[in-house]
Length: 197
Image (cartoon, rainbow, N blue to C red; front, top):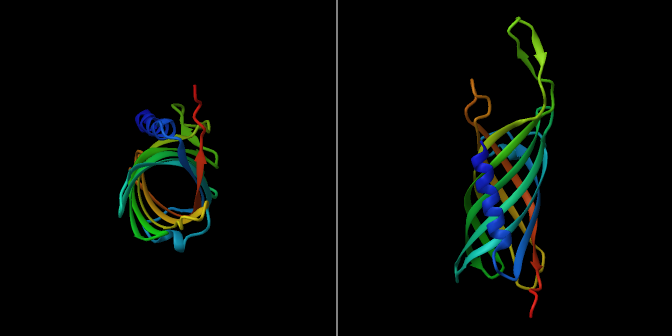
């Protein structure tokens, strides 16, 4: 399970440390739902927050290519807390000036911390309470988004819809676990002044 974390950290460092003077910071609030696509609109509210960087790989007249690296947290009420570290490669189509749609796919790491006591069967036939160190998971994601980005706006709002699959979730009987999230957020430019000799 450590390999997805290594890959996510690699893309995070790649995006943050690339030799460009301006980056874009992104922040969003979202609702996490244990469901197939469509669930975020009808399931109970399970709040989350997502922070990240966006690196522009290619800037085209109609199509842009973006690498996003994100750190997220959500509270699946009664069940678990989730900590996400993931990257997505995104294709953005510019419909008109200040309006675009996104589509992307990614890979990452999810660590879940249970909100209830866990017990395991011992050799003597009794159950003993186990620790709450949590469980690691591989996380695959896909995303669709709508962006408002007029050139004169420094803060650019977006609406993103994600579908994620975590594996393994419970090794014995839940190998794949689906979840969706609806993100409402914005991007902010960050500029670093390069030192000059």
